[in-house]
Length: 282
Image (cartoon, rainbow, N blue to C red; front, side, top):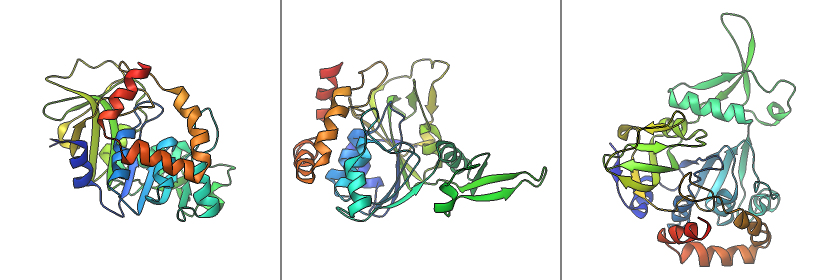
C-alpha cells in the first residue's frame, strides 16, 4: 500500500546508491522535482533507464549521479543535443557513462515484459538495423509455433520507478490522464515506486477514456509536489515551458555554467519552488 510522504522522505527511503532507476514521462509529466531531490541527496552510481532522456537526465549525468543509461532516444526536444550527456560519453566528464541503446518499440516491450514478470520481450523489430551489432542485449528467438525469428531483449525491472501524475487520493491510488507513455508499465515492473502528484484529493474524478489509475497496492510512495513536472507540462495544470528547453542549450554547453546553475537552482532550491515556476507559465 502506498505511503503518502514528503518528497524528501520518498527519495531517502526508496533510492539507494547503485540502484537501477527509471524516470518516465513522454513530453508530459516528466518527474523533474523528484530528479532534483535525487541530486540534492547526493545519490550515486545509479543506472538510469528512460525511453527519451532529455534535460532531467542531462542534469543527473552532469552531476555525476549516473554510472550508465539504457535509452532509445536522447536529446533536448526541438532544440538539439544534450551537452552533459555528450561530454560524459565523449570525454568521460564528470565520469564515464555506460550506455545501452534500443529502439522505442524494444523499450516499451521490455517494460511490458517486466510488468508481467517475464524474463524477456519478443518483438518484430531491428530488421536491417545496426543496433544488434553493437548491443549484445539484442538477441533473437525462434517462435516454437511458426518458426518465425523474432528480436528479443531483456525485461526491464528497475529497482525504483519515479513518475509524476495529476492526482492521488488519500489511500494512494494515482490518476494519470493525457499522454501517458509507459508510466503504468514502468511502475508495475519496478520493485519500488515513487509518484509525485499535483494534488491529493478525497476521491479521484471519474476517469476519461485514455486515463490510467494505478492502485495503491502497486505504488510504494506518493508525494504531493505541485508543479513537479515543470518545465514539462501537466495536463489541466500548466503548459510546457518551451523557453526553458531553449535556454538549457546554452546553460549546459559549458561545465562551469552548468555547475553554477545546479548549485543555484537545485542544491539551494526546494520542491516548493516548482509550483512557483509553473505558475509563471500557466
